[in-house]
Length: 83
Image 1 (cartoon, helix red, strand yellow):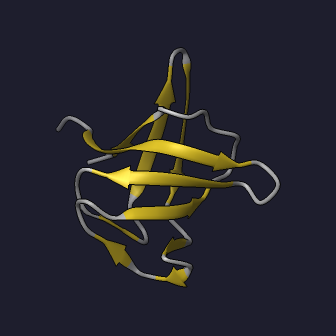
Image 2 (image 1 turned 90 degrees about the vertical axis):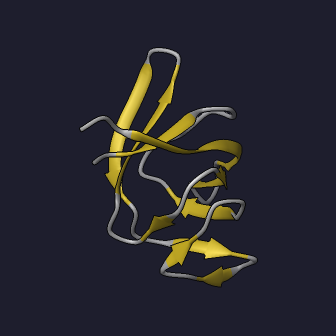
């Protein structure tokens, strides 16, 4: 099955390795995601996610979430849930 686009990176905080995602679909802890920008891409599991500075286990379409990431990501990078 094809990977499903779940959002886009709107900001990246390099000092704390957190990407802010604007979600176009739901996302929850434990989901495997792929972050893609130009020719760079990497995969990781969602382990820590926050909405309005509060830890959450899931987020819905339209939410803006802070996500701890394993590598540096660029603004406008697309985020896909690996099915």
